[in-house]
Image (cartoon, rainbow, N blue to C red):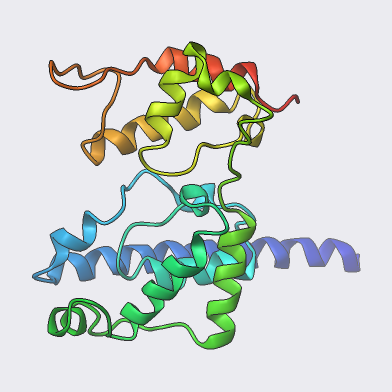
Length: 219
């Protein structure tokens, strides 16, 4: 009976935490809408990554990421950078949340009302970002990346981040990931495969999927 009582309480806690996180996101969006700089804040990161897609969604690192990072832009995907790149980027974000940075008075105006993480919280966020950061592809393990079959994958993905290790996902998972990346590229006006322009290199999404699926993690 004691165990039976624990499960409803745990489920209630998870539901409450999820509702609180969703509320933080909505509050941030309302703040952007009321800010003269709202359009700039909204364009920092694409809106394609959702709360439920965060790895270890209930962890302290994930919840702190939501609490602090959505104050200024859409939710970041930890895999948007590899572990070695995250420290410098995150440190720059913390400095900005404290109202300092390379925009002077504009930065103080942008960050008015924004809460910055404490030292311990910042450490937890950075550890989370690095733990779930992009795992770079090792070209020695995947020599095909430099062959014609890997060209579309290489040209598309390296525009925004390091080339991902195909074993990060299974063959069944990759198409959805690629579709989300395609939306990101469209949102950022990057090169995409389904909007041909006479003066830009064309990428074929089916070739990207074929490469990733061929070398994907088994399972």
